[in-house]
Amino acid sequence: MAMNTLVPRRDRPDIPKEYGVPDTDEGLVEWPWVVEQLEKARNYWLISQYPDGRPHCVPSWGAWVENKLYFSGGDMTRHAKNLAVTPGMIAHLESGDQVVIIYGKAVNASNTPPEIMKQIEKAYVEKYGAGEGATYALVPDKILAWTTYPTTPTRFTFG
Image (cartoon, rainbow, N blue to C red; front, top):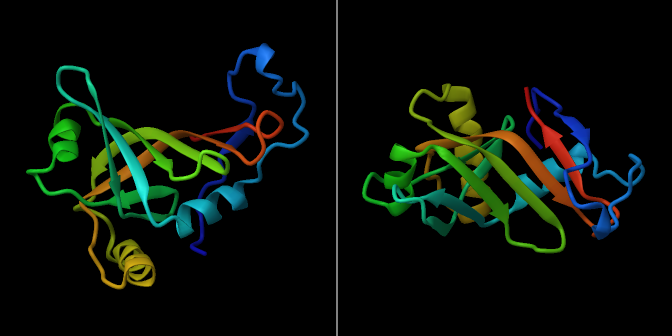
């Protein structure tokens, strides 16, 4: 597991009281579990926005390293075209039961330090059998996670 430089703040997300989410911190998801899910995930659903506001969703390979989701997309891909106009995006893991959803901003990964890029390449080789590098990093503002709904929904906030 990669060393994480920041442990985000943890609390309950804004969910209507009628859903039965507890008012207490009992049952909050632990950050190491979230990191484990993000590191081992094979596919990440990337949600971006067309310039006219319509949503766009596509599965992608990626690597969670140092609290960022690194992924690729050439200039001709729809998500790259979308991110050039509106960098805000969401990434969701495949499960609807063991949930991790990242909200943040995609930034160009071309200036990623070589030691981080080596970790990204290593993760790609381990998961996919080949390195791919990364053209983007999704920098999270918040992450929502839960393992049992409605008792464990947890919000992690950064910065």
